Length: 229
Image 1 (cartoon, helix red, strand yellow):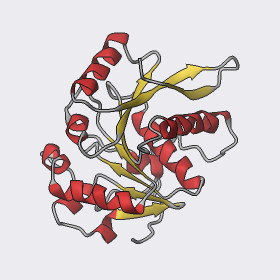
Image 2 (cartoon, helix red, strand yellow):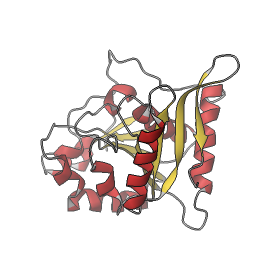
Image 3 (cartoon, helix red, strand yellow):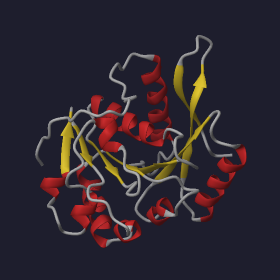
């Protein structure tokens, strides 16, 4: 697996670098809850979704992956939002050769895995009009199985669950899903509907991350709410 240099991006990045900041502490709380959500069967592979676009799912998945890597964990994040990929922009890597290229046998694993500050990344890669074929492919299933032996955490950034069924197709290869909702954007009915969709597919909901919540001093942070009820 080769190391790739970061590329510049016009997209504003909310990637956190200071582990002592109040923002990072909020993400670390999420990490603790993930680890405690299933003590008997540790969560290694989890997807991050949201009811709709613009609610912070990619920022959440990238920051969780980045913080795990900074804590010395072996982590890989895979962009499976094949219709609107954004992981490469947030993490500042090129999108040439990604999971689509790998699953279609257009690129090798060595060519698709990029590394940024000890975090391994697989971007979406070449656009496709058949994302479901990739998500249901044996190539992806075998890759995730292989990564289970190599990584402490495999994080999958997936499309919004109310728009497409992509995350529902991953139920057999993930240990759980984090659902991201945004105050001021996500409507209560949409959040409830998204939870029902996940539960009806027997997907383990690890919890709900609420974005754009505010502390007393107007801090911008991410709060974790356990989704057992």
